[in-house]
Length: 88
Image 1: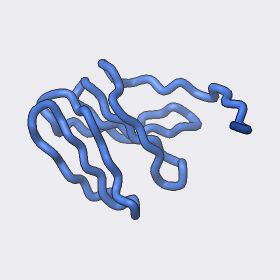
Image 2: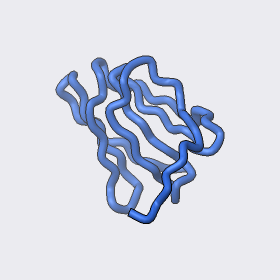
Image 3: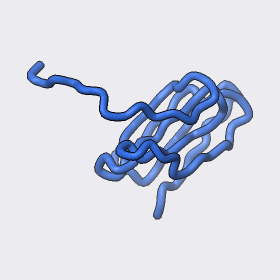
């Protein structure tokens, strides 16, 4: 392990535990999902919340991005999987 990890930014905004996170757009955006029922898009450099989506009625427990970065699927305790098309 040749890396020396250093904390650069702590992103805040979820009201409950975060259950997943993934970088998109060549690292310019960090998506996160939470037990607070939301999906948030953060700027990893400034910590700014760029977008918030609240589509589930219970906590979001998992997310998966398509290989081409164009689709996001989220799963929740509400029993639903929601598929989002990511576009500018």
